[in-house]
Image (tube, rainbow, N blue to C red):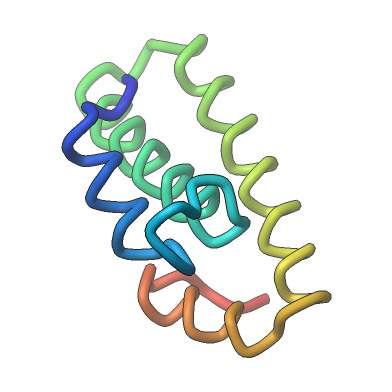
Length: 90
């Protein structure tokens, strides 16, 4: 369930701080969110695919830790990102 390069490039351009930024926390969170939503759609169709469910749970955990880091270091970027990605603030 990997993202295609055009979709990935669009996310990097949208959430990047500048044109050379490819690995900031905001980009990583946005990419993980897209992969999680793709896996969610896959799991709605394939209810017994437990290995994909486990992979999705690992991605959710990684995204949660990145969100926690971003909230601690750059709170204004965190607020803007969760509004744009329509995530809940815990």
